[in-house]
Length: 139
Image 1 (spheres, rainbow, N blue to C red):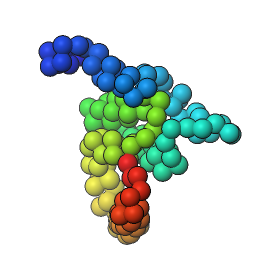
Image 2 (image 1 turned 30 degrees about the vertical axis):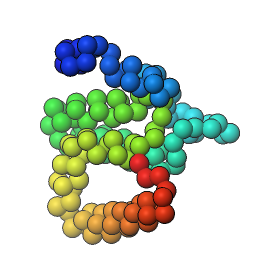
Image 3 (image 1 turned 120 degrees about the horizontal axis):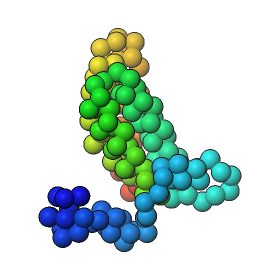
Image 4 (image 1 turned 45 degrees about the vertical axis):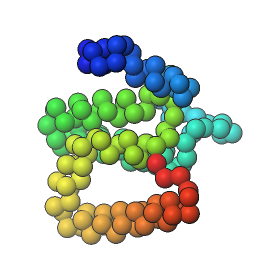
């Protein structure tokens, strides 16, 4: 907040920038709940929800397996990403949660996980590149 005030002249610059897009701070549960209520239109897609839920699980695993500073960073980052009322672009935003990447590297030492993770991630990468190639929205 001190840095934001120094750099932009407003300690609430993030909130002000998100307000331009119609996003206001709220609890992450309020962002996720519409996906589970029938008949409710939500901003975002099922892909955004899937990535969010996957990273919730990975952040929980980070809390259990990595040191406390990485866990705190991971939890704070995921809460910040999901507190704006929309899951749009979550697959892109969660890449900044680097302790999860460290966790995947640690888990990747296991041969079974490695043999499952590599083809799944390669397949998803190919799918998202194909969607992007035909002018689809990906993250």
